[in-house]
Image 1 (tube, one colour):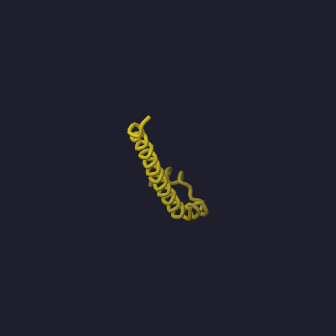
Image 2 (spheres, one colour):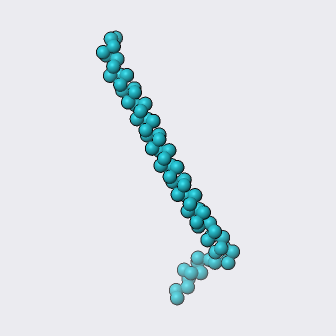
Image 3 (cartoon, rainbow, N blue to C red):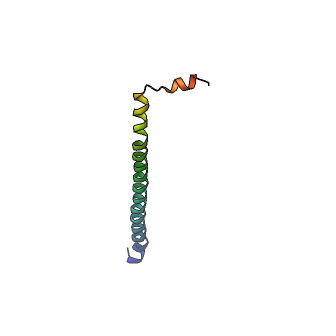
Amino acid sequence: MTLKSLIPAIIAVILTIIGNVLFFRYQFKKNKKWKILNQQLTELLLPLFYILKEDGFDISECIMDEN
């Protein structure tokens, strides 16, 4: 095999590695963004849940009461 026939294979390998690195970086950023959003929502809604739970609030009471 000559060097001319190996050049396309080398280019393909290099582009594949670069593509994989970029894809995994994108996936990591996307997952990190969702984790941050999930954490923010938890911090926002958890105190409300405890307040409603402590007061004995039941959602079924609101559904049954049509007024």
